[in-house]
Length: 386
Ligand SMILES: C[S@@+](CC[C@H](N)C(=O)[O-])C[C@H]1O[C@@H](n2cnc3c(N)ncnc32)[C@H](O)[C@@H]1O
Ligand SMILES: [Zn+2]
Image 1 (cartoon, rainbow, N blue to C red):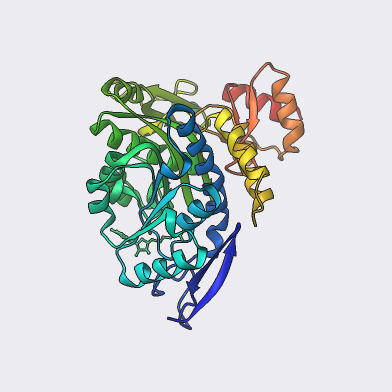
Image 2: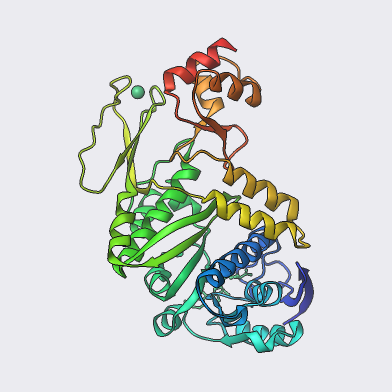
């Protein structure tokens, strides 16, 4: 295998050069490496370090005794960065022999053999056999085939990437139904819907193992969703998580949205604002996507490090931290089109909406989106007035 050295953060590993003519990202290359996921990995290093510090606050253990499973390692770059840049023990697993060989080579290259272990197993088998303080899933496409084992294996934290955004966001409806057992809506806030469908699925998988979850940070970036969850054992905590599951209705006629907490509930299929038929999505996670204090911990970690995507990462985490805890956003351009006005500058619009007494924030999802507790009619009145 032709290889080249890449450095991310303070870690250098060997990665394959994809054969000529192989489309990018090179999922057909002997071992996968996607340079466009550096942002994802930079944030993972900072976020996992913040998780490790939280474990140390509660447990009498040393940093190197904390275990982090990189369940689908490929070249090992993610887990090796965690070992090298965070100092906890990484278990680097991949079922491909080519990947396993490269992981062994990279452990030597990075000089972390005292806190790195390579395994070559089906991730599901490994996660059913062993428990880890932190479990990280970074599969091709959907993480759903691994969630039963991962939610069983993760003792303190679970980190998940999903790149199957088309099923999650409603563009591939049947596939989304099969994988997530949830109804998505392919509308202007589908990206947030995708995050909430993924979290809803994880909450239900954790509940099977009598575990509850607290989302610490979740973001939809480019072609993927990434989430960091604190996991806690206890049937009551699992039951509590169910209170954060529910449904959302969306009226495409007037733009009104409504949420319904719980699984055994009755939902009107008529808009309470204009009376037209609504679309209903769910079950979704309706609770928090981010814990502001954790976001601050991650920001501190980012500040202390030399990272290729540092400024981009900080901007993203700040946007997540400052987002209102409301389970949907509005797209300013969609509402403007609905009422036939041109879109005003976002800052001016947000200031004017705040003057009505409403809470308003931007979101990390898109530059033209906002969250608010104002009613749709108030939003429209403000847009008409500008
Ligand atoms: C998206 S890549 C991982 C990328 C890597 N985490 C990174 O940051 O560069 C997915 C990897 O999962 C491996 N894989 C797929 N299914 C697996 C399974 N059931 N068990 C173990 N590894 C698996 C593939 O061989 C591939 O190397
Ligand atoms: Zn309506």
